[in-house]
Amino acid sequence: MAKKTYPESFAHPRYWSAWLGIGAMKVSAFLPWCAKLWLGRGIGELAWRFAKSRRHIADTNLKLCFPEWSEAERKRQVRKTFHANGIGIFETATGWCRDPEHMRDRVTFKGQEHMERAMAQGKGALIVGVHFSTLDIGGALHSLFFPADAVYRPHDNPLFERFMTRGRNSFFGAAIDRHDLRGVVRRIKSGHNVWYSPDQDFGRDVSVFAPFFGIDAASIRLTAKIARMTGAPVMPLMFHRNPDNRTYTLEYLPALENFPSGDEVADATRINAFIEEAIRKHPEQYLWLHRRFKTRPEKTDPSLY
Image 1 (cartoon, helix red, strand yellow):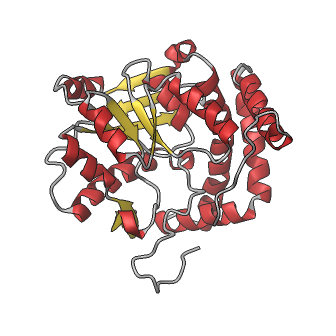
Image 2: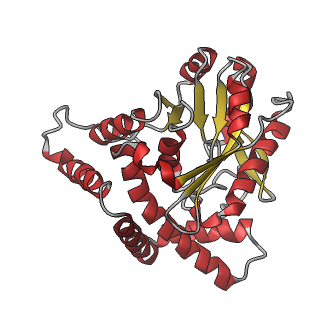
């Protein structure tokens, strides 16, 4: 598929919808918290009702990962997933557009001693996160305690890309293109902490197949590769919105020991096990709208979607 081309001037009419979206996000960042929750659930409810293809993807993912759930429970969790992602729009706007200091009293940070121990080694650290709806606000809250860069996927729209990058750079030290492996390695070797989330399906060429909720899933090899190239400790990080929908918990687990092991499948299995552990705490907050099992172990295997 050919990459879209955009006009050079951000005043061009083609950018007007992006300008409108950016303006809406800036305004929404300063709304009362109860309004963010109400509007977020409303947007999620609309998406759940009308985004049938995404609803099917989420339902399929949950059916594969939680076969013990009844159909009624699964349907309920699919709906909650859409609500959580709707709220996530307002959380993202808050993270990008406001000083995270105003939310310090809303966050509980556990396991800080693990990160402090890792940073004391002076090698930088590779922070392993997860694609939750709270991803960007989690990054903003993390910055109140520890500095970090972030690996991300650039947005196709240049105007929104600029807005997104500026927002993330306000709390991350640097936003690094996910294809810039040298940049990641360089930053870590310079003593920086780099946060990235290896829980999506990036295709056969960069992956091995490792169990994820008991299913062989295309699992990126990059975590072990970066750890091997830098010698940096690998730090698993969990972050969730709490059941009160007003506060957040971030938690570092101890650095992975004997990682990488030299066995790519074993290393990917360890990373997947951590991601699965994080998801099970609050499954509705995970990005089930992504086709996590898109790439099958054999090219002739039928699609699960």
